[in-house]
Length: 73
Image (cartoon, rainbow, N blue to C red; front, side, top):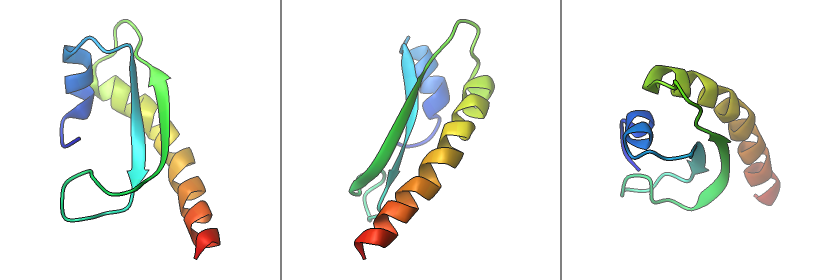
């Protein structure tokens, strides 16, 4: 949760990184999770490269989650 997630994932030596779409509540990144996506971290990834690759997943995940939420309303 929070900021600088790409750099933190790399610094921690994580093998995967991802994104989460959630409902917004007062506490940071703690709302109900609507969907998640993940991808491998590859050798040579920088925070910027990781962010660029992850953006593709975010662009797929967000509209899918929004459509699922709209169907529930």
